[in-house]
Amino acid sequence: MHAYPLLQRLGLAHPIIQAPMAGSSTVAMAAAASNAGALGSLALGASNVAQAREALAQLQALTAKPFNVNFFCHQPAQLDATRDAAWLQHLQGHLDEFGGSIALPLKEIYQSFKVDTGMQQLMLEQPPKVVSFHFGLPSAAVIQSLKQAGVFLMASATCLDEARQIEAAGIDAIVAQGIEAGGHRGIFDQDRDEEIGTFALVRLLAQHSRLPVIAAGGIMDGKGIAAALQLGAQAVQMGTAFLLTRESGANAAYRALLKSERAEHTRVTAAISGRRARGIVNRFMQEIDTPDAPPIPAYPAAYDAGKQLNAMAVARDVHEFGAHWAGQAAALIRDGLTVAELVQVLVQEWQATA
Figure 1 (cartoon, one colour):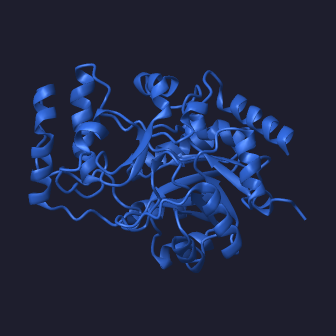
Figure 2 (tube, helix red, strand yellow):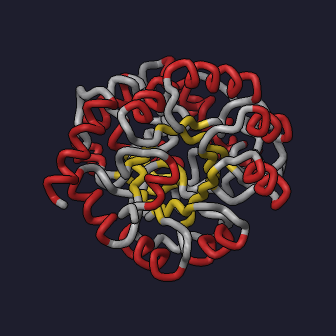
């Protein structure tokens, strides 16, 4: 019997999944990770159907290996004109600083996979080896049709209750996302985050679920991989570790932050996007996510405002208002490697530890 049945099932050489990171992961990154024997991931949560179709075509031209396609399954935004207006008022000092304005109504800039029938149809027309979900799950009918199309399904859980829902829904594997992880928290319910650490969560899920567990959050090197596998995970999902690879979509300002001492300081905030997410502490978190702030608009309408404010700041060469997502162990990041080189180093380190 294979030590890690998940790897056998997915045809992977290594127990490493390159995390889908909307905005930072690229087609080139996913292809390189898959070609290196890991599982590359294509983040399509922020894409429309036409963009997704194009990205899939590019990815299929670059790799014949299995890859993962990731979607957001959040509750569609409940826009509230009064709340949104109060939030823009809260941003006014910063809008004045950069000489811009944001028009109402704020927009739901990403459509949830739950209601995006065009995207659901695309997945059935061109079923990838793996589809993964974040923020929740699609309907039972969608899950059923993807399974019938031969797709292996994964979903993020941040606590035991979410893992139970994932297992009950017929999903094939659970991504155990600890509080250490960079980027958006996979919480199903916006108002409930148990903030469990990766290692505690992996043990809980390995003990209480029959599904394969993938550890995500704070894993940056081979020792971290070995520790996660020791605790019962069958693979790890790594995002921050890939942000400085040559194939990463991270821009120059983001890369500079990741290489600086500021990478030692991350925090979870909902103010940037409307959902809780961990990133490098910047002026957005310090000056906008304050105790006296009004209620934050719904995700992703808040992100519409946040992205507009960031664009105004960047135009003035101020890079303090972006979504510089990163995990708690970001200071362990390596620079200057290709994705293939990073996978090779991680595997060597893991095998030396194991």
